[in-house]
Image 1 (cartoon, rainbow, N blue to C red):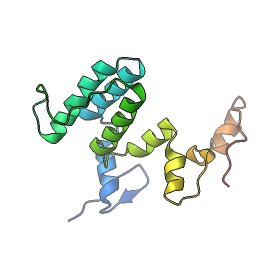
Image 2 (image 1 turned 180 degrees about the vertical axis):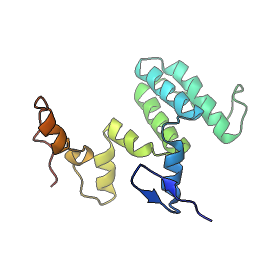
Image 3 (image 1 turned 90 degrees about the vertical axis):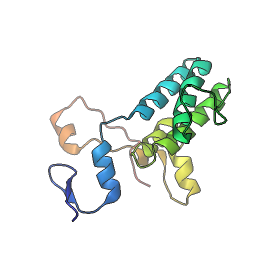
Image 4 (image 1 turned 45 degrees about the horizontal axis):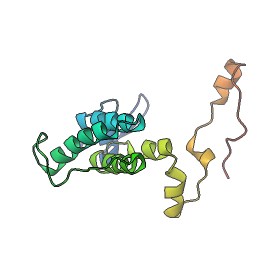
Length: 151
């Protein structure tokens, strides 16, 4: 028997696998997520060698090797850009179905390019949501940007 999951105060979804997974994982960053974020931050701060060891720990666990031993799946690169791509690829594989991929694409500026390659018509302004008019009416200090439009 499928039990409806509460997504928010107003709606319920019955049997929607992806919605149930997202609901259960929302706000809970698992160990691999934290390690991958840490490796990415170290790489961006110029500590690629240290970040490599952390990424390799995640990869070893994923492939079933001991996390302390060297393994055939270890990556050894000191190039910052190459390592960044490896971390993003590892996030894509490791965090599948955890609702992080879309935000990674937006954060890295790859969402529009990827969506266009899949045949979708999308532009940068469709990646952000407008400020609700009610909030604009309440707060006169909010400035509305003209860039938000749907083509």
